[in-house]
Image (cartoon, rainbow, N blue to C red; front, side):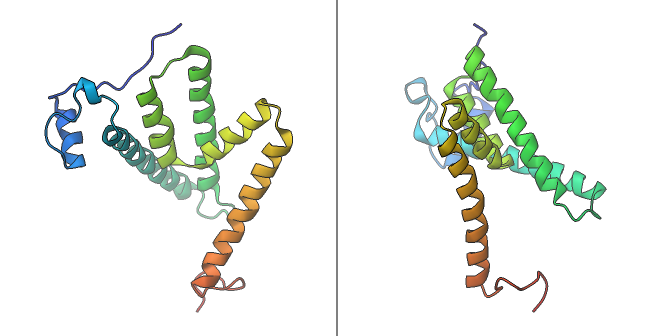
Length: 171
């Protein structure tokens, strides 16, 4: 079995101080007895989300710069597919090699990948259902997620006054 990769924050370190300051709490929150506290969990997710969101912004902008004339939303598509590949790769490392500690998983899966694209979680959960032999549930999950997502966006636009037939930028 391979050793687990772990995010270790030493109490008293610069990162520990930064995390404590970001949480608005006094020194000592990251002591060993509270190593995986709810505040620490939220900070790991937030830091990962920041990294993932900036990564999405930078990658999406780079792709858009080269494909601005396309009618197909290539940057979002490639970000989503990349996120699905990365979550599959990391989940395989967790499943077969028990490689990451729980806090590293929280940072990577919920934080970084959650900030990068939630589509990776959608893809992973759909494949997880298939691997459990739940074909019908997986297809229902995928179909309902897409259909209800589109319907929710349409309804939001409708409530905001944009209506179903309005084109972006038209008054």
